[in-house]
Image: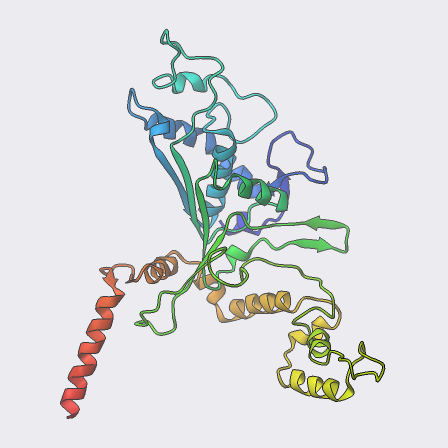
Amino acid sequence: DLVTDASIIQEAWVQGEDVDEEDAVKVHTGFRSSLDSISRKLKELVLATVAPGDSISDYDLVVTGHSLGGALSTLFTADIGEYGIDAGRSLPQLEPSEPWWNSLASGFMMSKDGTPTAKTPPPRPKSLRMYNFGSPRVGNAQFAAKFDSLVGDEINEAYRIVNGADVVARMPRTVNALNLVSIGYEHCGPTVLISIPEEAEDAQALLWIEGKSEGQCPVRDGTAMTSPLSQGSLLGDIISQAGGDENSTGEGGGGINLGKLTSAVKDRFASFEASDITSLVGIDKKFVERESNIIQSLISGEALSHHMEDQYYMAMGRASGFMAKVGEDIRPMDLLESQKLEVAELSAAKED
C-alpha cells in the first residue's frame, strides 16, 4: 500500500484520452492500475449477487475502504456513478465495452421475448453511497470536479472520513517543480474529520463535517499564494486596524492615523507567529500553518498512528457517542458519564 501511495504520477481517467490536454481528467497511476486489475471481476460479482428474477435496481450499493482501499472505493464509485455497472470492461475507456455483460445480467435484463437486448445500458443500483476512511487523494482538480458533480444525483452520498492528523489522507501533495512540471491533487467529496480526545473518558463527540460545520476544511490545501495585504496576514491586519478616517490627513480622509498605526503595530506583534513572516512575501498564513502541522504530526508520530484502523475504529465510536476499543465491548458514553458521577459521589461520601 505504501509503495502505491508514494507515487504521484498521473494518467488519464478515461483510457485513450489525451493526458496532455489542459483540462484532462487525470488520476493517480498506481491507484488506477490497482483497481483496473479487479474492477471488472468485482462488477461481475456485484451483478451475480442479484437473486434470479430480481433487479440490481432494487438493491442499495455501499462502497467503502480504508487507506488504499479508500482510494479504490473513490474510483470505483466514480465509475459506477457516471457509467453504471459496466461489466463489459474494467475502467472507463474510449473503446466500446464488450457486449457479453448482457449475458451475465440476462436474468434481470431481458427483452419481451426473453433474450438479452443489445442496447440495454449498464444497470444501476437503487442507490449508490460511498464512505471511505483514511483515503489518499486520487486525482486532479478536474477529476474531483467530475466526482463532485455526480454527488446528489448519480451518487446519492459520499463522505471522506479523516482521523485527526492522518497524513495519508493529506497525500499526495500538489507538486510544481520549478514551474516546469505541475502535478495537482484534490479531494473528492466532503470531508468528515473525527478525532480521539486527549482524555480517554471525555464524553464530547468530536466530529466536523465539511459544508455543515463552521470553518474551512483543515485537510484541503487551500491557496498557497495570496496578497501580503490580505486579511489575516501581518501587514493586512496592521493596515486594517490603522485604517484612515476623516481626520487622518487634515483634508478629509483616506490617510492612516500615525497614532493608530503605532497602536496597531504594537497589538499585532503581541500575537506574532512564525507564519507571519511568510505572509510578508505573499504566502498564505493558513497554508503555512497547515503544512507546519503536518510536519509536527510526522515528528510526533501522530501522522501515521492516526492512520491505523484501530484508531479509526475508536474515533468513529467516539463520534457516534460510544467508547469503542478493539477487543472490548462497545459502551455508550452517557453510561460512562453516569458511572463517573456515581464514582465521584461515592468518593465524596467517603471523604465526608
